[in-house]
Length: 270
Image 1 (spheres, rainbow, N blue to C red):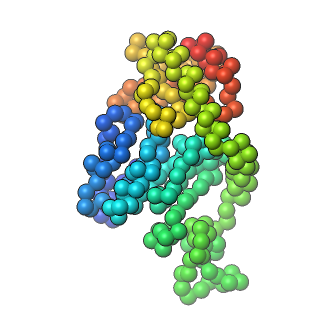
Image 2: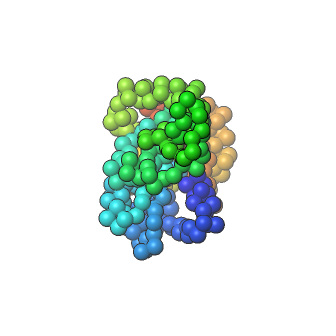
């Protein structure tokens, strides 16, 4: 919803929203995007990684093609930033909350705006911090700060920023390459075990270039909500997610701090 509802709200300004229906659930290929755009397309807004399937899109390939056609590219990066490299070379805008893979506090996050896009992305809120107002005196014109401060209108969430800084320092000390390699190793551990237990894993065969730390699975003859509750009683926390077609899956999203022993605890509880 976070990457759909804001665009729906622009309908009264004449914006037409076209929804992408991928050829496979939760798996957006570059060709799916290119097939949807037309001469009137102004921007593509995509998630860097699907929140259920864990499928990471090819940001570079999509971004290069969009740029060649003069189409803006906005990325919801919440499911990859802090876990996997999320390139912005061909991205115009990227946003991500801190509380997921970045391990930061709620109500904090990041916004990336390509420098040459700043004049096109007008701030929607005005205040003392994002405008030029020497000595805190209101001016006759709206002169926005020349950098990212133009999007920070007033008093910032200082506690959130301090907490987010600490989480980013932790991730930086560990190294993103090590974190992403660890998450893929955990996926490689989980996949054969889940399949051997008769579970249907969503897209188990994706290349690791498109895989992430998210693994989702189900079983036709098993109640996934009941399974989630049973795992909780065994001390294992998982998420229950519902796809657009109504199917329910258990989603696993271990981070670097989860140990192999904890993964085997999950598998034994299944």
